Image (cartoon, rainbow, N blue to C red; front, side, top):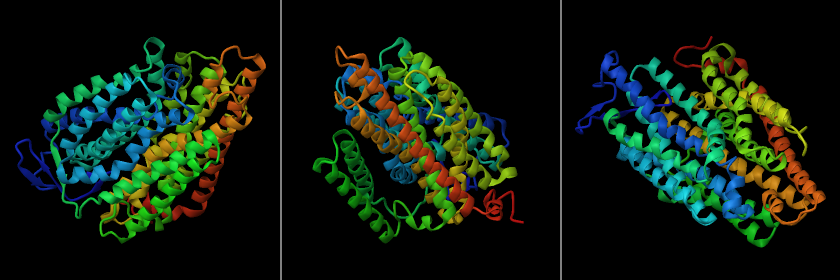
Length: 523
């Protein structure tokens, strides 16, 4: 089996159950039948991949409608958005190991079924609490789909060149899902109620369940050790406690009920990290972070997704609730940035050998920083041009991040640790997507609470208060915009700092050595 293009020991199982050792009895890579099956299998696998990434962002433009229908509190609204990302990110590595032992295709099928059922539950959820629960189940199911899809895909393409092409398409589809999620949501909301953004998953899931058993084979590996349940529970529980405290503090201030969960979450995560160093087969191998290149790659997987998710969520509210733009037009305004992101993700692997990963990472962080700063001139009366320019410029960096993070992380570690590096890289993307809304979204909420008219904790709730004076409406919109500006400036500054670190930590000669260990030996 291959994980992120790196050879890993394993077996594939035929539908009859007979297994073959990887590399000894695989299907002829040159056969026409095998080639057609491989590319058809890729199309089938891309369905769940698109859904998992798309559902991380599809609610960004839908939240004003959700708020009107279910009236969630400020912290409930944030949980609706990011409980999904936390569930996916917290369980990716655990489900990757489970799939290795019990079968990737089996886990794919089970995950797809639960993803579809949770989508139906979310679409018809009558309360914020039930919607949060449905999103959590969707996230758990999504965590089964991503690593298993990549492993099954790697079995389909035994030729290294075609496998690299397939993994590139996989990465581009994952990036495109994040980018087009708000756009698809906006198009659906123009004609249907907010729950339709979840029901769009059902046709894709149904098609996958019908075709996957025909086109895909079972994949298992011989990874050592057992899954540590305590590590899984403490990693997920610590994250949720810490973020709950942050959200609660943003909505209600530094109260005991907010600080206590945050402190408890940090303590649990600290104990989790200490425990990993003592385990023979840890859930996360923290020793990998001793390598600066690996560390920078993982942070590059996390921070751009955090910035993108927070900016997309806050900008969606800005366009609809501040400027009063219809949801479909707001979705179309996000299209240029989505196109730039997807194209950049596709072309980056083609030019990386010429420019080097150091240059790519510099462009990544500095373009995101500039793009985020382009949101600062927006006002309560206008700023559409600045928004479009921001998404297009930052989209270059976001696309590069999707394209190079996993490969950079894997290339920075010894081959026998490539599986752990790849799993951490995938996890950083999902955690970053959730952290962006949790942390930067909470920062914007704090600013609104401090500067707003103090009638309600969110802009949408404030605007629903009857008989508001014009001056109060302007004050509320200005307070929200201040929160957006501060969140964007904070994320932009962090990306500028990461760009400086990349400049200092990644010398040209080292990037040349790690750009492609198989095809570009060091000079």
